[in-house]
Image 1 (cartoon, rainbow, N blue to C red):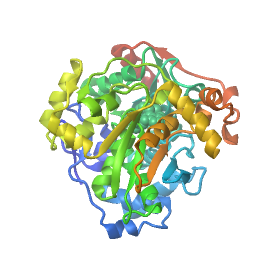
Image 2: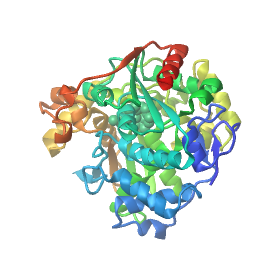
Image 3: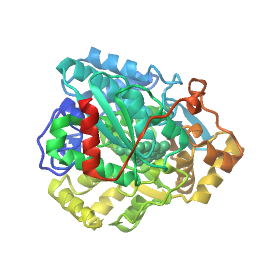
Image 4: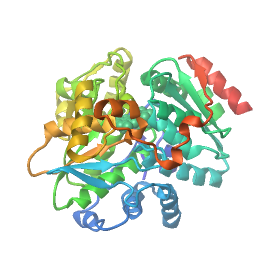
Length: 462
Ligand SMILES: Cc1ncc(COP(=O)(O)O)c(C=O)c1O
Ligand SMILES: N[C@@H](CCOP(=O)(O)O)C(=O)O
């Protein structure tokens, strides 16, 4: 299995190389050259299997010869051993035909753990084998950063730097990033919002001298392995509702488009997904683009679902690659236009996107009302991101096709918003009960590439 760049002008890599490389050297994102398919019989055979077994069968064809079957099974088993639910991703019924896929039972209480725990294990295995070191730099609006720190803390061959927008993540998210005491963990609070942090990370990848000097690696959903690990729970959820003999739809609270793009890959692999619904908060560039064809970032507005406060949605580039008929030149052209302010998706590409994706938006009041209504009606306490999904799903439901909404974070990560909306306190699990008492360690940084690069080089030298 080979990996190619969405912009068509970077070296072709193996799975392991693409995983350790992060951003392609032409600025694009890696994708498999072709997408392996699973037959209806293969999908049917997943019924009743453990999450780990489904993960093995779904991901194995993408890996080539990077790991033996036994090695990969061991990696998967270690990755999910620390999850707080035997099913890993349990499905709960909310209403007739509407289900909630709970993705927040991992160590940092967000869906990011599904991929990050796996790539933590993959990196560790791979770096031990090669004897190499890497410097991971990630951008986060709150959840990727804490999941990355949890997955890589204390690893000898890795330094992990996380850039988060100062003052724009929840207190629990911040403390998850600033309280680990391991010397290889560096939480950097940047002046700006998530889009600034993500832009600086991509700038670092495009600064080849810096990139090669520090051994830069990425664990944002830039990294294909992140997306791949998220494909698995689309299979477990759909199969438990009758796939491949019954279609299902998914609604996905969306920011950087990684999670919903994983659903797109599941669909291309043969999973009978009817609609993939992109649910945005008031930072609704994706909903506007899918409705009007115009993709023009116009500034982030802070919301009560802060992890989705994103206007430059990295993985949309991967969807555009397929919508433009796998034409890397066309994608490179759009990304140049984006640097100059924005672009319009062609009518043909828009039609291709709409064959798979629907979209909807949920404002702040609707988010609060959904948390309150869902608590009162079902006893399920939603985090604000999951509430965005549930609200949009409720407006999109079709009779006859079950809708599965992804619950992307635990309500305890956003206790103030949840309390205000529902009057309910969402307590942290016992193992994190002292989070508010642990000492914090962070560095404030300006939104300045050279200052951040200098800081990273100095920290690594020490
Ligand atoms: C809790 C939560 N929900 C939803 C999202 C959006 O996911 P994606 O960026 O993959 O679209 C994020 C951030 O990624 C998140 O942290
Ligand atoms: N919401 C994310 C933003 C980064 O997304 P990623 O999937 O590209 O890592 C976060 O919580 O950091």
